[in-house]
Amino acid sequence: FNFKQDNFEEFYHIGEPIGSGQFAVVRKCKLKETNVEYAAKFIKRKRTKSSRRGLSIEDIQREVSILSAIDHENIVKLYDVYENKSEVILVLELVCGGELFQFLAEREKVNEDEAVEFLKQILEGVRHLHEHSIVHLDLKPENLMLLGQNSTRLKIIDFGLSRKLDEGVEVKDITGTPEFVAPEIVNYDPLCTATDMWSIGVITYILLSGCSPFLGDDKQETLANISAVDFSFDCEDFANTSLLAKNFIQGLLLRNPNERATVYDCLRHPWIRPVKESQAQCRRSSSINLEN
Ligand SMILES: Cc1ccnnc1
Image (tube, rainbow, N blue to C red; front, side, top):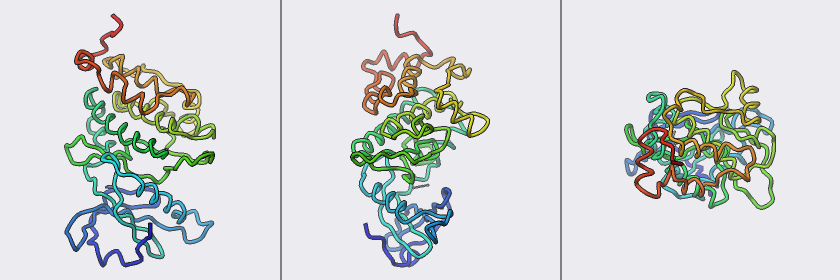
């Protein structure tokens, strides 16, 4: 992928900011030639190797090479890359329905059918990543963007922490957002596709209850709760949650990555893909006991 050295503003009108991260700001932009709108992610480059500000060109190239290797309707597309001495500009598919996080903030939580609709798309996107030996490592509501204002279509964005699982190369040095990281990250063990599945368990818990399962009063407490896999469904918001939904979450929030449900297990889970209408039916009525 060769980064274009041309002046970005020669080819694009730059619009309003629509997102920002630690070393990047995302703005709406419009290609002058076609009037088509995109999202431009302006990533600040490190000035010197030892600088703490900005990203190294290697980190930026990693995000670009991963994004350019995937093509899936639930993953944001990369169209072009420009660079100048102070920043690299990723021209991305415009996804401007806001973060799932904001949607949740307004709704506090969602009903099980809506949660399943969101999760099916997240699982399909993650399946595509895992099939290409790519782990996202930073799955959280802020990185799930809705297509339009009242659309429930979503796309996974921000691959800044994602990694290709090359043979044998153990990836251990990452830390995502404490609330969502798996025990193996806390304990500095090798990471794998199961690391993303843990995060999906945390996201599901939050979607259904509005509560964050491991959140403590500070980062240390949160990490300790994760390491101890210390969570419960006591949050009063789980009173009306179906057993299938709780079973889905319990299959993901397991300490041992090898025991955790894979993305395939999740897509086949009866809560996600009811094998017969009756199971979908029981999702609508609350906490029906499937055993009897
Ligand atoms: C924030 C963002 C990122 C990528 N595409 N659209 C919006």
